[in-house]
Picture 1: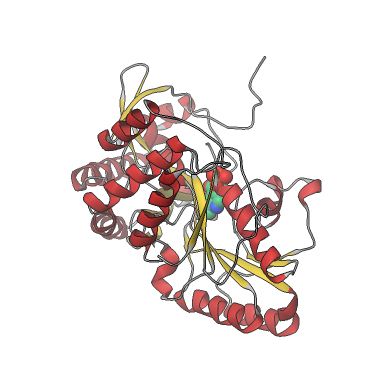
Picture 2: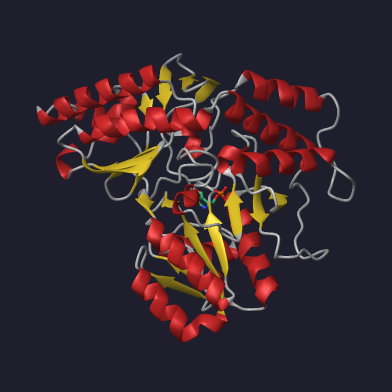
Length: 400
Ligand SMILES: Cc1ncc(COP(=O)(O)O)c(C=O)c1O
């Protein structure tokens, strides 16, 4: 049997990881500013995370949601405190797509409506409704196409207002990333998010904040939507939640009431997943990682802004993107092969930085130094040899 070849991969086999570093089978060390696609939140193999999981493994790894799992309640309480939404209700599942799928579904159960508003360049996942709300035709199979999803331009308050004024009573939910990740690090305007809140309240629609990539402390606030100072009705989360252990969830405002059997999952919220997720929150709190994300993120952004070749440096905390001009199109692969540094990308020309929230300033300094070296090399016409060794030309950043 072969693997179903849907991932354009780098020709690297990672065999070991620690903190912000990974090592390949040849013993080469790489700085990981990609975090396996924004997943590594507290650092690879953080000792507290390892210990929590190991201890849990000695007790019980899994049982279904047909019995009490006190770890789920502990997780809900800890999460509520750290994210500042203690009156919300937690539903646990396994992936970002599943989280958004459930968010869209529960919104529709709640108000009995069918229409969903999503935005240009949005990415919400690969399952049927999440992918229908994703603005990329390559991911949407004919069976996923849905007239229920309407795409409006991102950050366009007027378009949103006009649409609501004409169709407001049909709209079930509005789903929006606080910072678009796959779309290329596009920050949602605070006014735009407040407008979504206002219109959803006025028309009885549900505001869904997709925090799968931009959430979990990455921007320095728990949810990047929080910068707008307006609460969403449902927040989705995944990636950083388990630091690599598959766990995801949605938190749901108290006015949306649960009914038995409306949502469900076999694996979601299992004992091991809860132990991993609790460890992550404990470390985020103990090591003040949201503060670190702000501090190291600011350093990186300031430095990047001072590099004249790079355009439109943007983002918040440790979710940063910048445009690379055509003359430097090999920059990302040269960073990988010459500087041994993983970064993310978004087509056509964006480099994305999504490191662990525990990234140390001196690692960020090393990165900036290596980046400048590579830019200088490319400016002087060198680096061709490296390009030939590079096998990957991916459609998106989704090498996961
Ligand atoms: C904003 C956003 N939502 C949803 C998803 C889907 O998450 P998953 O791949 O865990 O299903 C992603 C994944 O990249 C994402 O970036």
